[in-house]
Image (cartoon, rainbow, N blue to C red; front, side):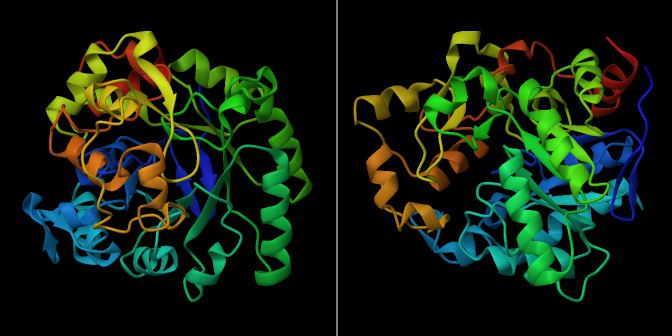
Length: 363
């Protein structure tokens, strides 16, 4: 089976594979630039860009951590990542993943538009006001992430009423994805919420609003998985964890090793200050947190609104900004390592080009 190109707004993605946006520092310029260069859609994560510039912080520091959301997210860092990705991707479309839960969401979306991003993808909440921040940039395609047809219906109704526009595509994400889920712990385990069960209903809802392409995400691993999603009506797939196993992935080598060494049972759901369950690898950090012996929680970066300046972090036992940053810096003792449920299948590091060929041509 050969795959048709994926159209998102005015942009045509030659190979209908969207690389998932992974922060801090997993999908930045090298990974996103090369995925777009090879015909997929490279996605830059906007999370933690204050860490980008020579691995030095672009703003004010407290104990080697960026002070406040204005420094954890750095416009200068974001701009440098986008420019460097463009040098690799050329004129191919390039996307940014911007979490709805972050503090300063609207500002980051505006920055993405100003800095020339073609497509914006948003999850971790229902982005009902997303178009508000892209006014003046009609060519920027908007792609929300949902986990049910109901969520898509809410977004479409509000966007149409308030902004007279609809999503250019929608990502439907099942509970096998890495990082934050759109379900509760209990819902993640229910058969009716698995990706293969929710794609068709979301496709059906999308059809009611015109020809909105649906992109399936969460546990998609190989060509046969892609073919299954296409058979259910999806026009493309989004894959995150699989791309960690590439030379070009911006993640620290230690982060890649954690995934390469992970066993199936090591990948589990855990609490998160964002307010949703998150999926990742059980490591030294998760064992410390379980015993309430994790690193000190100070909320220096004020990264996500639901955390309420560290209150939720204290409840779950870790600061997500600091622990994801530790993973980016290669600290396996206190780093937080997100992974989809299939992350244990990673057994080699290959090039993005080789991976894209495997996904489109077969193993």
